[in-house]
Length: 315
Image (tube, rainbow, N blue to C red; front, side, top):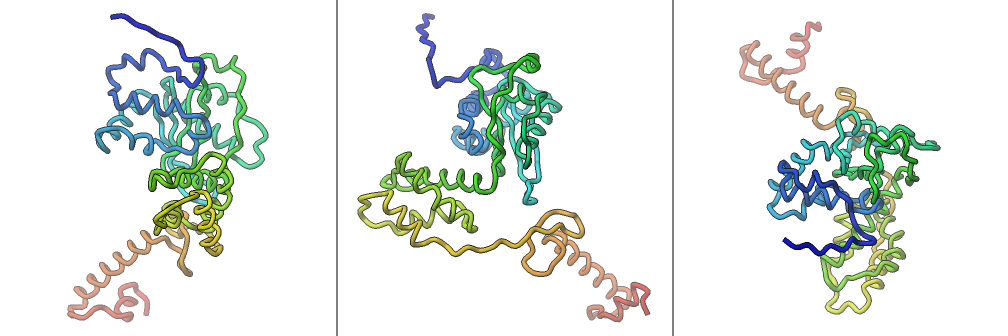
């Protein structure tokens, strides 16, 4: 076998030979790993592992198998976190070196410390290992990892200088990332809606304002692509016109409350103090109690309030 190799001068990804020859990693798992490590920092924070796996041939079964293989190899870790707004999200960490659960947990904790309000610096103990991985959000808040073209192994963490990292994303930053993804997805929905980088940057504040007012990314995409004219002379002008003319009214979201039973954060629709699952379980227990009371009274009718009070020992 002959080889002709020219090392790339830029836009390349370093990966260990042990991963190339690892028989426990399928082709799909190796491709998923390389794609995750090849993402630039900003793109990694806005991309989920599910989105990366969606491009693999073989469907969901192949993608799930690839994720399990990377998890077993210590290259993919997931953690469930509750955001400042009370939403539970799953964050994923992809590393180019195997990490044990304790090391992955330290990296997750370092990301949360950096994203905390008023955090003036980074955790020195977690900064160096973070250079060997990239944090990807899985259907939730974007991660904070950076991908380095020269990864630092965990053993050299004490001597490596921490690289600067951007601050944790706020709600406006998350809306901007989602809005940019919608604008870039327009060309996939309709080949006529091709926007340049400068046009996306100019339209981004308007699109982010839609998301800030409670519109979902799918709703924003539908508003920009539904009922297009037969001829689109200027895609940027058409998108700007729709973003401006169809701008929804600002709706203040209801505050989050903690469920009185399970303490899970939920957004009430009225005066309820319990989340929907707890209310459903309570209704099921109530129906079961009614059946028990009917059997105890020997009547075929549903037990009334007097029977319920009598069953509770209240006179």
